[in-house]
Image 1 (cartoon, one colour):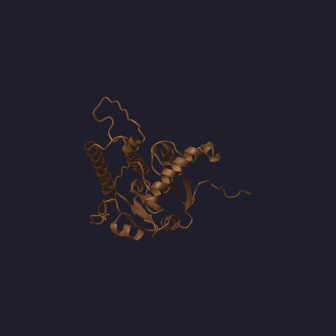
Image 2 (cartoon, one colour; image 1 turned 30 degrees about the vertical axis):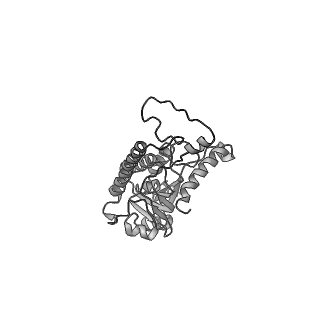
Image 3 (cartoon, helix red, strand yellow; image 1 turned 135 degrees about the vertical axis):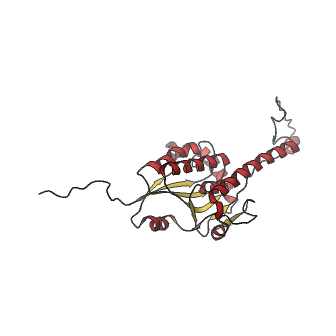
Amino acid sequence: MCGRMKIPFVNRAPMVAVLRLQGMIAAGGRPGQLNDAALAPVIEAAFRRGKPKAVALVINSPGGSPVQSALIAARIRRLAAETETPVYGFVEDVAASGGYWLATAADEIFVDPNSIVGSIGVISAGFGLQEMIAKLGVERRVYTSGRSKSQLDPFRPENPEDVARIKALMEQIHANFITQVKDRRGARLAEDDRLFTGEFWLGARTIELGLVDATGHLVPVMKERFGEKVRFRSYGIRRPFLARFGLSLMEDALALAEERALYARFGL
């Protein structure tokens, strides 16, 4: 007596790849930081492994490097186009500055009513320590070949030309950020002069401004789109093996302090 043959992978429930983007965006290899080099294989796997019906970005980032933000977002869009896979963004606590740049890689963006979104601007900060070293009797000695090689040296008084130069560079980065937002959000953006001033807002207001599309959380929204039996497969950056055992405590502490400073800008 022959039983019915079961063919594997036939009529399986649809699968959504969940790509978690959490933390500060920065070049380098510090644990927990987001950058294109670390995320490249993760993003590739999310789009190609198991033929997902969609990729969901779960975003919780206060921002960081504009270059890394641009590289990550561009990689997501390239793979979305190559695989013809829709991308949904879900903001948790915050998607601000570079974190919002990542969110614009999604075709639709969902927020919690308490999510913080925005801060479309560029910031550069430092310290001026020239008076401190003068009081200590320390003489600063700098040798360069190139008139602008020592610009913005924190141990020397500010040079107006250097300040003007760095502000011009920041304006160019800001313009690139604005172009990214306008290209991805298009006609959904409201006509509001404050959109690109660096301000940030909570969920409902960001919907009115067109920065996001609706309130909603990952599981219910994906069930609504792909059915109650939808499956989820999670992807994210894994911590290095030794770091899991606390063998990089100093590096972790520095990274955490820097990240906490970024989150603190948004009251988090």
